[in-house]
Structure formats: structure tokens, C-alpha cells
Image (cartoon, rainbow, N blue to C red; front, side, top):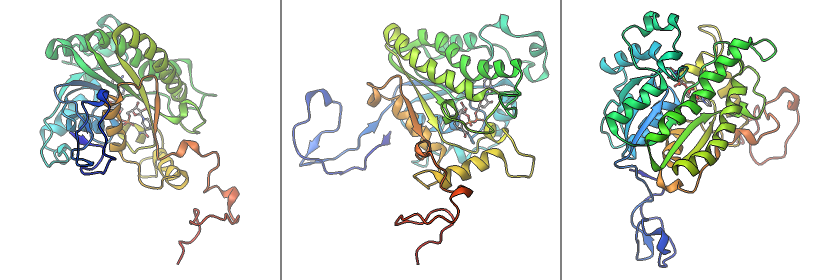
Length: 355
Ligand code: NAD
């Protein structure tokens, strides 16, 4: 169980409104227990986990810490290496939870979110050695397997993206590259929702990961990925209505800041050189209102909150977890400002710390 506030935080003593009867009791003018994110007894499926470097892993850990049973979907080409990392203990340190216990390795389902049914899988994929011996990885098959293993599930998370031409700008990306990005990174969420929603409990919650490039220009984030993230956010809003009415389900996106995950590290940069995502992280740190490092866990706990009953009234929202960088319309570390003396009571990039 996560704590949003530390125990003992003083509240004004008055009888709690009756509709908050599930919140901690007020005793002697202070709340004795913390406001919990309690997912005990809930089942979650997180699509897009293959190592411990990305947002998916942090979401798995946060949901587990909150008491949920978590299963994951892993892309077949990286399934072997993920399973090996787990079985050889390479990820043991990353399995440690905040109370010191070791997280049980979540059940892993091979999942290729490019394909909805077995009929969609092309021959060259079926016969590819990275798919050899891996069956039932299309979205509809995985949804059925998860439902048959767990019954109705409560939480669905989409934490995956792929763009074969991510290094190409929009002026150069091919039709196939653009559509592949859209298929793997946006339609995959729609399809997961279609196939999983009938297997979800009313009151359940869905969450997907987006990026500021959905709405503003992020040079270098190419291959149609910016378009795919715009689609993802738009689809989330439309689905909030459809899912709310049809299934009493909620859906939200988290617009996450830059993180050095495996997928992000592949966006650009030669081996041994500073990668594109490292430049993005430096930019974020230099220009965001908050200069702290953005941690994957910042997104993990936000997902746990959004998927919890505490967020029962929140759907159709794109929530930014980015240290605030999106609000900046000027880059304070820009060469253009070099030499200008801002009159702030704190140092700007390049200025010395006050003595
Ligand atoms: P990650 O490498 O941890 O996750 C991406 C996952 O997608 C990988 O496990 C990969 O195997 C999987 N994947 C790729 N193609 C797939 C397919 N066809 N079917 C199933 N799985 C597939 O990297 P991440 O950066 O944490 O990405 C998770 C999500 O967060 C993505 O939606 C990404 O766009 C988003 N995001 C990342 C950043 C960042 O800076 N890293 C910022 C904002 C949003």
C-alpha cells in the first residue's frame, strides 16, 4: 500500500463527510493513517515490459506495491532476453520493493501489439526465428488467455511504442514507416481496449503513456511518433466516453517526461556517443521549472493513483508527469539569452550559484 501523505499529518477536526467513509478516521484532530492507494485484490495487465529501464517496469512495481497482482505483455523479439535476465538474477536488485521484500516475477505473456488476431500475422513474422516456439501473441489471444487465467481484470496499462523510421523527420518518413508507428504505438491501444474491456470489471481503469510531442514540436522525435502520440491522446478522450458508457471503465494518458529507457535510447545517437534521449534529459533538467531528476517511479506512482479508486472521478485526462517542462515557451539555457541578466533571486543556467 502506498502512502500519499505521511501518517500524523494534522487535519482540522471535524466529522468526515459521509461519502468519504472509506478514508482514514479522524482521531483527536489528526489523521492517524495515511491516504492509501490500495489495489489489494485487483489484477492488472501491463503491456510493454521487457527490462527494468522503462516506465512499464516502474508501473508494474507501483501497482504491486499498492497490492495488485500484475501480469505483463512482452514483445516476442525481446522475450528471451527478458526471461533470461529474470532467471539469472540480473534484475534482482530492481525487484526489491520499498519494504525490502522482493517482488514476485510477474506472469509474462508474449504480446505483439501489431497484430489483433492470428490471421493478421504475416508469414515472414510467423517463420522468424525470434517468434519460433512463441504462440498466441496477438492481442485477442492474449486478452483471452489473461481472462482465462485471472477472470475479470481491473487495470490495463499500455506502455509501448515502436517506430521503424524513428530517425526520419516527417518530411522524409515513408508511408509504411509512418503507418507502422501509428499501428504499433496508437492503434495498439485501441485494439487492447477493444479486446480487454469485455474482460474488465466495472469501475476498472486503463492508462497509456504519451509524450509532449503529441501537441508541441520536439525536433528529432521522428518516424511519425509525434503523430502516433497525438492519435493516442485523441483516442483516449473519445474512448473515455465510449468506455464510460459501455463498461463503466475509465481511461487516461500520462504525458511523461524524458527518461533513458531502452526504447528511448534507440531513437538516435551513435554507439559510445551521447544519445538523443540524453540530450532530451539535459534539456529537461536545464529548462523545466523543477530541476530534480525525473524518475521512472514518478510515472509509476501516478499510474497507480490514476488506476486506483482514489481517481474514480478522473477519466479522459492527459496528466503531465514531466517536472513541468511543457509550460516553458522559452528555453532558459538558449544561446539566444546568453549575456542577458535575468533579475531572479536564483541562478539561471550558466550563472554562478550565489556565494
Ligand atoms: P521501454 O523500452 O521500457 O518500453 C517500450 C516497450 O515497447 C518495450 O518493452 C518494447 O519491447 C515494447 N514494444 C515495442 N514494439 C512492440 C510491439 N509491437 N508489441 C508489444 N510491445 C512492443 O521504453 P519506455 O520509453 O519506457 O516506453 C514506454 C512508453 O512510455 C511508450 O509508450 C513511450 O512512448 C512512452 N514514453 C517514453 C518516454 C521516454 O522518454 N522514455 C517519454 C514519454 C513517453
